Image 1 (tube, helix red, strand yellow):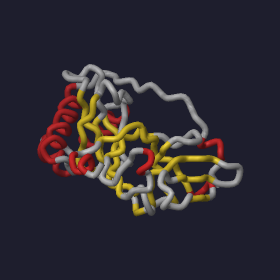
Image 2 (image 1 turned 180 degrees about the horizontal axis):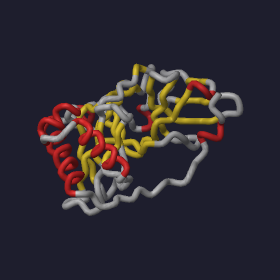
Image 3 (image 1 turned 90 degrees about the horizontal axis):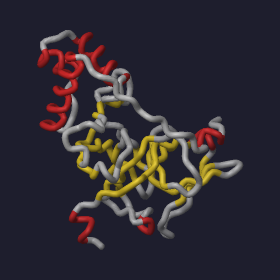
Length: 225
């Protein structure tokens, strides 16, 4: 069973960015071009062919880039790669944040941990070194200003304070956006719409994935206001 202490606030870690070798810089530049042109990272096979190196060399390069804080991967063998904006980038004000699948702000739906394009945000507002975005489906958080179709900008975290709006994974395969409350015997995920019920789960059923720190809204969502 997941212990309540895992939800307590912990100090944020500062991410350092050691210098890259020429080969690592070449791989990073290649990844950036591929994502900007195609909206998703290349396969290991494609990267090896394009760069004229072995699969092992690409895998080792990815591991080095992750260790040095330049990329974030979902898992060791996952294709999902997210670039980390560097503080010394040419235009630090604007940065791309990966959009990871889709979550619901109504009834839970299956989480899709996959690259789904990116969104450009103001780096002077969203300063965290690692961020991700999720597209909202549903109206259960409407009274908190989160609408169907919005992009929720999130800080990756696996803990939360009472009252924070979080992305929570339920039973390992369903994701939802709700207000988090920790009780002595259960976790409460509370909507911000009286038409939706309060959700209650055991400690071992809920894993916090991130804290919602902002919203990006398109013209169609604005037209609905």
